[in-house]
Length: 268
Image 1 (tube, rainbow, N blue to C red):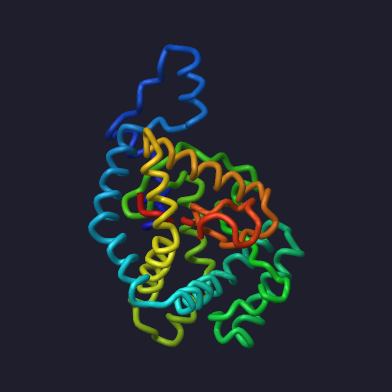
Image 2 (tube, helix red, strand yellow):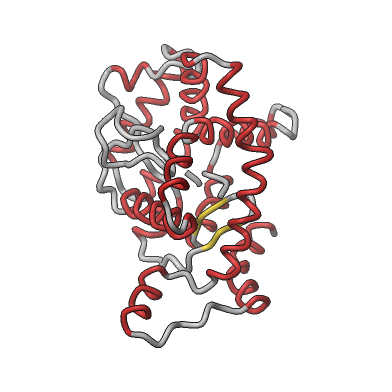
């Protein structure tokens, strides 16, 4: 039911709030179409709302996390959270017919879950098996589904209808969801994992976002451009092995260790 509402969200927003009026100037119209952001007036309002939440909730939590947990501990937690995503990556690599990527991901999950101590140590990455990317939004792209208009979702951040739907499907592809239900793990386990992932990602992008906001004349437009570039690189697989899969702010084409540290997610 929730996923169905998510699929209907773009259309409902258009009906309720209307779209931005396309400009008459040819150059401006071309830019308008390239941005693919017909809901820009509404998106900007949600963007500001997310920024307020980030300023008073998420950023303080991220800074507190950095202050309390040492570098090595944060890297271990990041590796653990990324290892939990590997089964979903494996499922999507398989759906996309990417046999080599699927084999690498399966190998990574097996090695890191055992020798890597539940994934806290990226033992596989240290020995040449680099983390792959794969999500159902990407799968839909490869199957020919259109992306739809750019969206800023409350709490979730930047997205497009195709990726929003894909994120919902990924939730159902995640075997940990069924393991938790099978063994009666606390119902808040998924929420705790999502919160931990959000704090981890925000803590890894404090400097990057601060610099982007400081140097941008229009932070919203700069953020939109950054998201689009990163997501286009992910779905077209121009990067063979992203250093941090799912990290919105890291350049997927940068060499390992370069650039700043999803998604599906910076809150703004």
